Image (cartoon, rainbow, N blue to C red; front, side, top):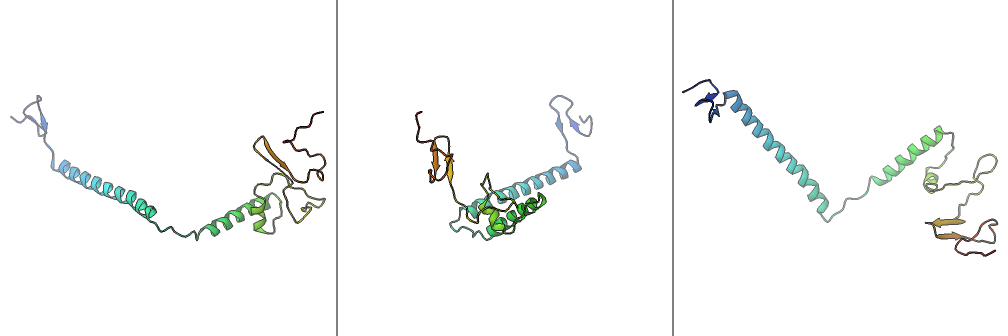
Length: 144
């Protein structure tokens, strides 16, 4: 007994009949799923094979990245009216927190040296304590 084009044997235990369009769409869906799974598998395994090989790629692009980074940093410093003549000087000053300058705002010496440093809370270092007045070695406790 056929009640409608999509339902056979009434509403109890009905099984759906597929139209020709639904059959074609199901086949297309399966094809797209298989192609997507294959592409995903290839894209997943290719980097694993490439990076697990013993030969490491050379770092030819690293100097370019460093130069571009310094160039953009120099442009930003120029916008802040800071004068940078040599790009390499930015690399030397990357962790400096205090820079001493004289009246025309040029560095006082052409030589930079570490006078005092601190690593963490307890480990402190002062070079030439007698020459640096006002400095104290905190590793040495002085009782008053």
